Amino acid sequence: MARIFEVAIIGGGVGGLCLAHGLRGCGIPVTVHERDRTSTDQMQGYRVRINREGVHALHACLPSQGWQQFLDCSSASRSGHGFLTEQLKRLLIIDYDERPGPSESANGHYSASRTGLRGSLLSGLEDITYFRRTFNRYERRPDGRITCFFEDGSTTTADLVVGADGANSRVRQQYLPHAKRVETGMISVAGRLPYSSALTESMPEPLLARPNSVIAPRGCGMFLAPHDLGGSRQASATESYLMWAYGAGRGRYPSGVDLADLNGIELRELVTENIQTWHPALRALVSGTDPATITSIPIRTAVPVSPWQTTNVTLLGDAIHSMTPLRGIGANVALRDAALLTHHLTAAARGGGDLLSAVRSYESEMVGYGFCAVRDSWTAARRFTSENAIGRFAFKTALRMAHAMPTLRHAFAKHT
Image (cartoon, rainbow, N blue to C red; front, side, top):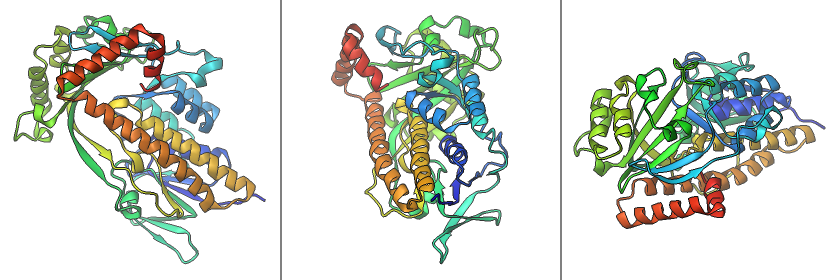
């Protein structure tokens, strides 16, 4: 006999909205409570790389119209990843399968704009998504259900509350106060150059063909990613861009200076100074970037937490396993969470199963792969900013060997 239970999702990010679609599509009553004032408050930011795991989750949870909207907002750029020296010499180039045709669209890799991705995820959920609702706290009722209180004075009550409210999750802070995020000592400075800039036309082709990681001799590096919303740079110049993110340990920045206090011009000058011996194209990219697009980002990571007793409050995505951006998989892990929780809750609802057993099954699997991703991402961050010259040389040698050996290249591809 089917069971009906209500789910309240706190947070309208990628994972929370994907979960809402999945549950609603399976007939489970669900609401989303988002602190943003409107649906367009987060319509900004850089690209999101959606790998096959994330694509499978979206395909499983989204209705056909939402799936097509996702495909429409995904980048026309060729998939793959390159590793280059700071002089733009090739270390390793990984080319994923060519962009799939319509019949194989759920098996590809995509580059989606944050704007388009969130728009496609919000579409169809307008009647169950409540904005201007900043979560304050929750209380357990005598009947076991959970009532959430929001700063605007509103409340909602549900059988299950899912905290999908990001890295600074208030749900996590109340539910698992011992689950912490820590500073990694790494700081990133990022900006973007629009395709409408004449400078983009002079960029070397490798920088426009795929995302690239620039491996400097030691202590720092840069990530670059083209985000082409159309089939040609001319056709999409007003929206498409080449983004860059310079990352280094705190010791590579001026002592006594808080980068959060610097404006875009100051950050641009700082990075330009730090890469003065790099390839001229990289220096031109940074110096030619509009300072209004340049920001500094302190890199933090979650600390693995011991298993906890399952209740009818649970967590999803960055709310539990936030990670460094070095592997670019945070959104994909959140989407995997959403699909997995949808699967277990749907099975419980349709089969008359126990809600807590479904949540326990989800958590036991999610904690395993989620914190594995956290560890892998932190390892990549340490490698990216390592001051060990010998270790950096060994890493570059391994990349060159992988490029020459298909078996090794495929192994790298699985972790990129």
